[in-house]
Image (cartoon, rainbow, N blue to C red; front, side, top):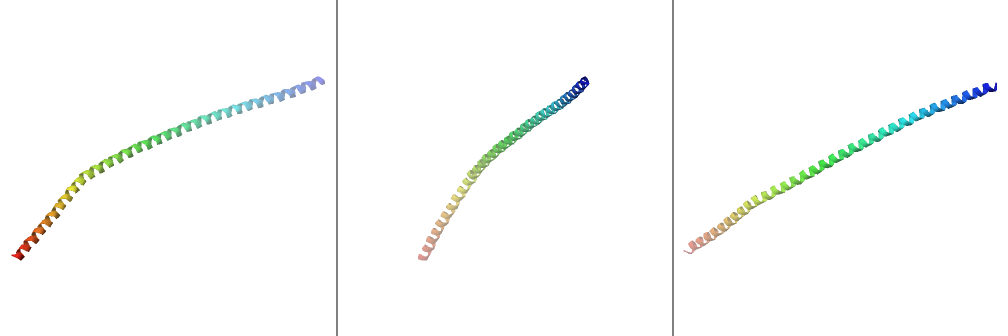
Length: 123
C-alpha cells in the first residue's frame, strides 16, 4: 500500500513537473514572440527614423535650392534695375538738359522781343 501511495505521489509529482515544464515552454515561446515583436518594432522605428531623416534632408535641399534661386533672381532684378536706371537716367538727363536749353532760349527770345518792342516804342 505504501508502495502504491509512493507511486501515486511520484506520479502526481511527475504530472506537476510536466505541467511546470509545459508552462516554462509556453513562457519561453511567449518570451521569444515578445523579443521578436520588440525587434520588429525597433527595426520599424529605425526605418521610420531613416525615412524622416531622408524627408528632412530633401526638404532642406529644396529650401536651399529655392534660397539660391531667390538670391539669383534678386541679383538679376537688381542688375536689370541698374541697367534701367542707367539707360533711362541718361535719357532723362538729356531731356532735362534740352528742356533747360529750351527755357533759356525762350527767355532769350522773350528778352529780345522786349528789347525789339522797346526799340519800336522809342523809334
